[in-house]
Amino acid sequence: MRRSSSGAVRLMIAVLLIVLLLAGQAIGDSGNESGGGADTTEAVGRAGFAYLTGIRTFVAASLWNRVGPQYHGYYDEIPLDQQVYMLPTIRMVTLLDPEFQQAYYVGAWVLARRGDVDEGIELAREGVEANPRAGLLRSSYAQILLYSVDDVEGAVREADAALDSDWADLSEMNQGLIDIRGIYAVAGETEKEAAVLEMLQELDEELGDTLTPVPHDHDGDGVPDH
Image 1 (cartoon, rainbow, N blue to C red):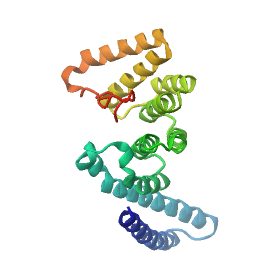
Image 2 (image 1 turned 180 degrees about the horizontal axis):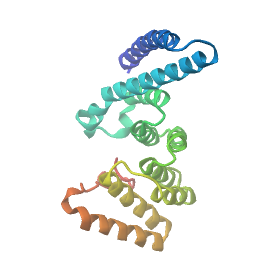
Image 3 (image 1 turned 60 degrees about the vertical axis):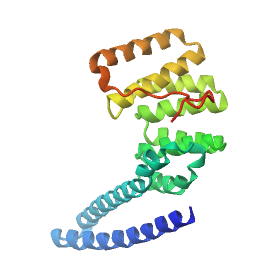
Image 4 (image 1 turned 30 degrees about the horizontal axis):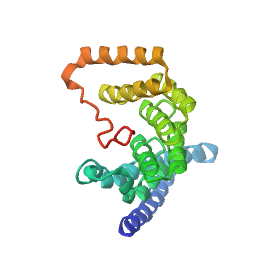
């Protein structure tokens, strides 16, 4: 983990140097295009912010690409509570790009599964606050609240919000609805559970076998697998 962290730090230092270089270029370009005064200051500010935002999101994606393939490949067979090697990178990704949903999603479950439940809940909450329309993060937050601290009311609240949120694609929506249905079943919300089941059936009729089945609780610990 130390090698991974030091590598990430070196990358961040390189990024800061690039940002400084690009900011200088932005100032020079803006100065050439404008006559000066307030207009120049405003143009420099816009250009610098655009450069910085682009660099930050690029670096966040680059950092995630270092752990993402491992998480979905070789490390896929390792329990989440043992995948702590990802946490420093995940923290850096969320700081650089607060809209990077997968980092919040994976990080919150790693923390919750290893026993750092409060930290997991905090990271899940942070993800929802930064991405209030993200169905993936809402449904995941609801699951953590229900299965980690038995907060049924909070879980139902977040599940309700997830139903009124956005999804990256229909496959993600399918997984989210399955998770939400499970939350409603545990909470005894039979009408809501039936409504979600109807939504799932409609998705199945529309897409059929193109939807990938979602695994659930293969390890028998009472918590849906992720």
